[in-house]
Image 1: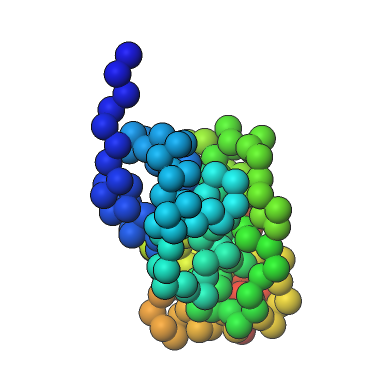
Image 2 (image 1 turned 120 degrees about the vertical axis):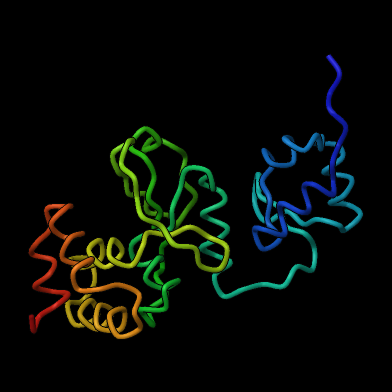
Length: 195
């Protein structure tokens, strides 16, 4: 069986969409063998971030690289950034969480998770409203706020909800509908204490 020709430029184009990162699987998908990948590592074109995760050498870093590395390691095709990590990406919290929170379909709950990653699950068939920030998909603001309502300090949750409302990221109705849909009406008492 003949392997497909290596497409380094295609791999780099995909990596550019992911802030310079790519996985060993993505390299394989572009026909880049382990030997060829090692050659480019030794030449300095790529650098190894951790097992199975690489980055184009010299690609500018971002304040959310830690979140991105863990999201890519878990699998961009199955994970969404969620909870406190999504709150940080939405710029609704000054706290940078010490763990990266990711939401995956329940069928992936047994996946190997990198250190400092918290995996949350959702029903396999659930459609999750998402937004994109810094090249990563995350739970939409209403879902994010309902998710964190009972996980962070009540004052922080209320302040985050107020910021989201004043910046037009969501409406009170969207927040109420999300809480009702998820059976978390009590979250509204935390998020909207003066309603």
